[in-house]
Amino acid sequence: MRVPYPDIHPYHEFQLQVSDLHSLYVEESGNPKGIPVVFIHGGPGGGTAPAHRSFFDPEKYRIILFDQRGCGRSTPHSSLKENSTDHLIADMEKIREALNVDQWLLFGGSWGSTLALLYAQAHPERVLGMILRGIFLCRDQDIQWFYQRGASAIFPDYWKEYEQVIPASERGDMLRAFYKRLTADNEIARMSAAKAWSVWEGRCSTLAPNHDIVDHFADPHFALAMARIEAHYFINQAFIKPNQIIDDCHKISHLKTTIVHGRYDMVCPIEQALALYDALPESELHIVRDAGHSAFEKGITDNLIRATDNFALSLA
Image 1: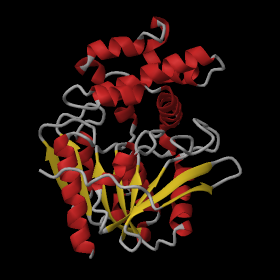
Image 2: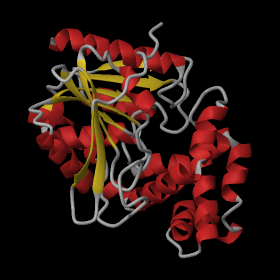
Image 3: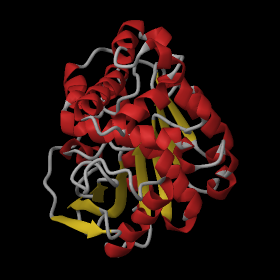
Image 4: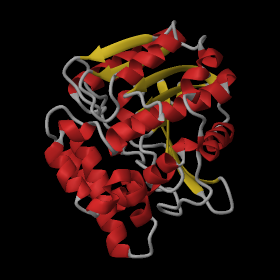
C-alpha cells in the first residue's frame, strides 16, 4: 500500500493579487522542472495544508498549492464579496500565467473535484489530465443530501448536534437558516453556526472516527471560512446551471481522468462518481471498499498516490 511522500517545504511562496479586494496565497514545492500539478482544495473554503504536498513524488512534480478566495492564507479571510465559481476559475488562470505554466495536471477532491471539472471544461487546452477524489457534482440533490435529509439518517446523533443551533421552526430549510446566521452581524451566533456546520462535515468525512480531522474542522479560523463560503456557494447552486458538469463532459472526454471514491462516502455519495464515470467513457474509476470521503483514509491515499505515480510515468 502506498503511503504519502515525505514532508517537504515550498521553494517559492507569494501572494497573488487577483482583484482590488482579494489576494491569494500560492506556493511551489518539489522539482521546479517537473510536471506541473495544481492541488485544488475542497470546501469551498477549506484551504491547503502541508500534507497536501505529499501526494506527489517531489522529484517528478512541480507541486502548486493555492488557497482559494477567502480561506487559508488568502485575504480577506472568509469574505463572500467577489467570490463565485467564475472568479475561482479566472484565478486559476491568473496563477497559471503568473507561474509560466503552459499545461498542468489537475488534482482535486470533493469541491476540488467540482472546480477541477469546471476549470477543465472552460480551459481544456490547459489540462494534461485529472485525478479526482470524492466527486461532488454540486447538484441540488447533492446539497440536499448532506445539509437537509440523507446523511442525517446515517449519522442521526451527529445531526442532532448540528441542528441544535437552528430553531425547530426553521429546520425545513437548514441551508437558508445557517446562511442567515453565518452572514449575521452577531459574532457569537456566527461562530456557533460555523462550528456546528464544519464539525458536522468533519465527523461524516471518515469511515472510522478520526478525532484529528474533527479537531481540524472545529478550529475557529478554519470553521468560519469553511462554513461561510460553503453556505454562500451552495445557496447560490455553486453559481452553475443545473447538472452543468455532466452536461458539459463532452468538452473534456479526451482528457485522461482517474476517479477515486470511497464506497461509504457519506458527504458525497458514490452515485456522483458513477454519473461522472458514465459521462467520461475514457476515465478510470477506483472504488475504495473500506473508505469514506477523506483523502487521508489509507485506501484513498493509496489510490491517489498510485494515480500520481502513473501519471508521472505516462507524462514523462
